[in-house]
Amino acid sequence: AQKVTQAQTEISVVEKEDVTLDCVYETRDTTYYLFWYKQPPSGELVFLIRRNSFDEQNEISGRYSWNFQKSTSSFNFTITASQVVDSAVYFCALSETSGGSNYKLTFGKGTLLTVNP
Amino acid sequence: DGGITQSPKYLFRKEGQNVTLSCEQNLNHDAMYWYRQDPGQGLRLIYYSQIVNDFQKGDIAEGYSVSREKKESFPLTVTSAQKNPTAFYLCASSVSLGSSYNEQFFGPGTRLTVL
Image 1 (cartoon, helix red, strand yellow):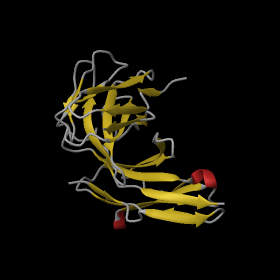
Image 2 (cartoon, rainbow over the protein chains, first blue to last red):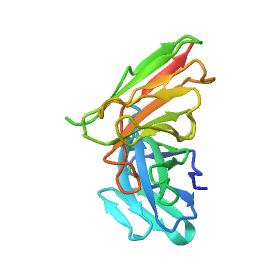
Image 3 (cartoon, each protein chain N blue to C red):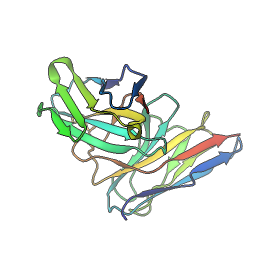
Image 4 (cartoon, each protein chain N blue to C red):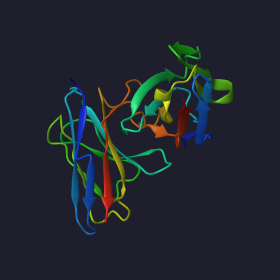
């Protein structure tokens, strides 16, 4: 069964600090997809990234970067020089491709990030 | 502007009443989904629909019902059979079923409170 663990329930940092959000997943599939979503206080989930299991290259988008390591089943998310606007709940999610379940996103419980001025 | 709209934003219901949450999308997406979010929890899938007039149960469908009469609309009814309906409900859509290769876009959510 697929599972996503975000061990950090809450993180609090001061503006301009770097912060890493951890995500560990479990799956038996060899082909799967990993996602990160941001949920600001307004409630709407905002898509940040999708990564397939065959692409282990790290990705950088502005102040955001993602580190995917299959060897440790982790897909960590780093925000560099954090800003108050980064304050949100961040969800990691997994989608398998076998057994007809490729429609399904399994979410972690989320990490509440608070960036203080 | 393309997107997903959900209404109402806040909804209060008395115990024993059915209530319907609206979800509309103008993204021309085939697939639509309903999720439930409880405090400190991730999202759990209630129902999903691949095409018009077709929908499937997700992980926690008991006490809920849906319809998909139009491509743009996927309303969710929370029935009196749902034992603990107070939660935040999120609707999502994707180009097609198979979120493994196309991301789901989410609406702003409806917060349902049972009094």
